[in-house]
Length: 398
Image (tube, rainbow, N blue to C red; front, side):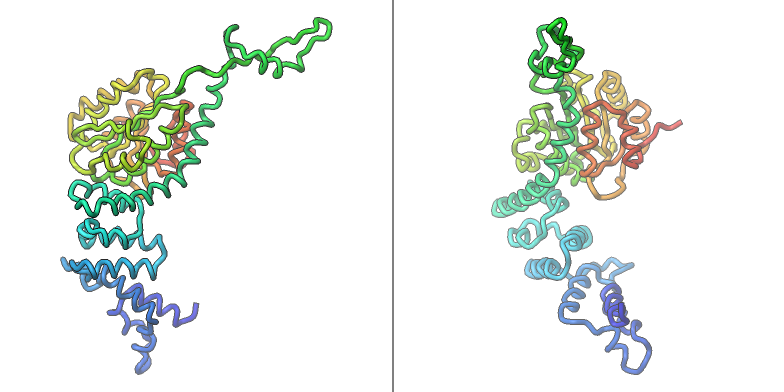
């Protein structure tokens, strides 16, 4: 990297106020070295300055986008022009948090300018109840775009993992006499043909597959409080994928202080997402009570609670219920987050108490979730699975 390129990069990082300090020291070199930006660089610099105004650091002053819708739309267009998609997503999220631009998501022309991603979908869902009618169709189109992208990425790994974990269960290796599949049994034992007896000795008997429509029950119980926004999006997508697989019966329950069973909507992930109400309090105990009533065969049920475990209801009753569900034989797992956002905030005390009751608690990325479900459906030790993935689980306190 030559000296001019090095100075250019530092100039974009530090902003216009640093231009003079970047010069090499000779007369007249300040403007020529530190502030020598192309037209494209200047546009990038202005976009960064509007969001990350260096002069506002340490004060209450915010960036320079202002409240003007045209200015916001122009800025959104600029960052999509001059920055890669991964950077655009970060800048959009920072704009929502730093500059309080939630209002921009209530206008169709604003939505048409943004780069769709999971965080944007979460914001749109949270604003659903106050969104003007003329904006809702645009919002649905944006959400549809993100959902389609996630389905393309996540469907195949999820299906392969679940089918693979249940493949053995589809074969009956210890059939009763009336359950034997004679054609497959004969083919499997041809090497055991006894010429003197003119018969085959079936050392391996193969039965017909189980006649049940579902081999396992999966219940996803999802905390829809505001802090769990992106986890709700991913959980809804995975629930829709699981619901399409006949080998499992999938139910989706979302909750805050109230409970909504979205199972009947799982054929349409968009309806599921707009059926959630992000925000509000949290009553985990009540939600688990509802899910407990859905359990038919504990030994064949996987219950995944997705929550940061900040209980607003009755903590003592919650822990009793967790213990009862785990003791019944249900494969019970708690995900403190289901997203790529990094280390989550969660109630460490409750997580440790869940662990003491035999319920592992840890954060999980969307890429890891299919393999987690495969391990749970085959009733593997989830603590050992997490250790193999280098996932840190919450532990019981001594």
